[in-house]
Image (cartoon, rainbow, N blue to C red):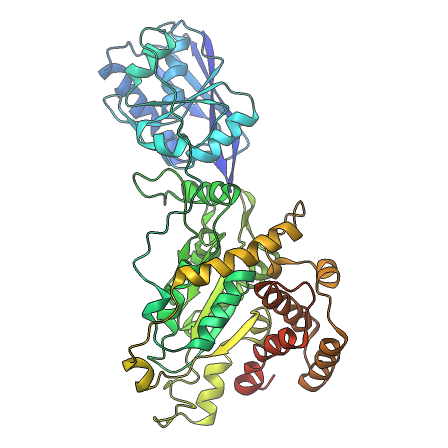
Length: 508
């Protein structure tokens, strides 16, 4: 006797269709599970056996062969338990109803309860693409599954509910909720908390408006971390496509908070400087997203930037340039999206007080050079904006005047992003920082005077071709913030200020 049911697997960020086949034949009782299963999949034999018995079904006393196809792709996780359970019941004729229009996702407990799974959202997206009409998912994944229309998502708590629905004894109502497209801004921090630092705030506004990477250099206590942690409060609203794409990544990583249907706010990740290159880029025997991909459509803040492992810092090169990270393993090559803003912070020297107006630096020139050399030229060249954060004076800290609130800055950022969305409509580019060289030439139109300023600066500063393009893109963002179609002298002059610190600290 033979039966097959549908399910889905995850490889990288995408799901793929899986067919679970079950064959019952004569011979000594045996339960074989094939199809390149990992340990968790192989252990499903015992979970399914116990579930069948504890749910008062008969476990077949025969030779059972279950194949999880395609057989040449490594299967991992306990997500196939429910589909194996249904396939055995169908093959043993204990379930006679037609299941061809259904797919099954979920891990089983020994008493037949269905436990939550990771990667449910990308599986449902693939199910919709492959014209599957209905998908059973764990009840705990209901909010995650409710964001999609065009497919019946059936949340179930146990296998009894699955059987009753298929047999049309007790139907389950598909879950679907209309998403609130307005951004939820439940932040407990605000830029108004930061006294002074007007220039640094301006830089972060430009970075947020254009999606530019940024590095802040300054002594301890100047406010670098405080500023970076408030950056999410001024980031532009996410589109529904960005929310869905970000939620897919978090679903695969199992990082969606309980009670949350979709990622509504741009991610803000702040990995510790002891993180490995694999932790940043992702990986493992069966690759999983790392911090770079979990920052997709958001911000990754790297405090104490020089203290990160050199291999970890160098792993940022491809993601910063191409907005993707590719991981090659024996099981295959996966590509994760990594369209994120990098915000790095560092001290100007090991003791932290080089250039401080009141504290004397005690570092030797050799120690300073070793410290700064921990940040390589290629990485520095990929960071658009370089800014020096000076200590805040007493008069600024004790002043009674109110600072500008995040909501006011955010409005300007949103206006600039709307200009960019209109400019890049249909191209796949979302912000100025991601413009191709051809787009840069087309949209970064300078006045004659601005062109002369840029030419003189390029020759005197010895800028690279990459730095030239980045200056144009920063100037384009500054012009967008002032709602100017043409890049004028003031825009290009401000952009040039943000590419000068590498000469001061790195002599490059």
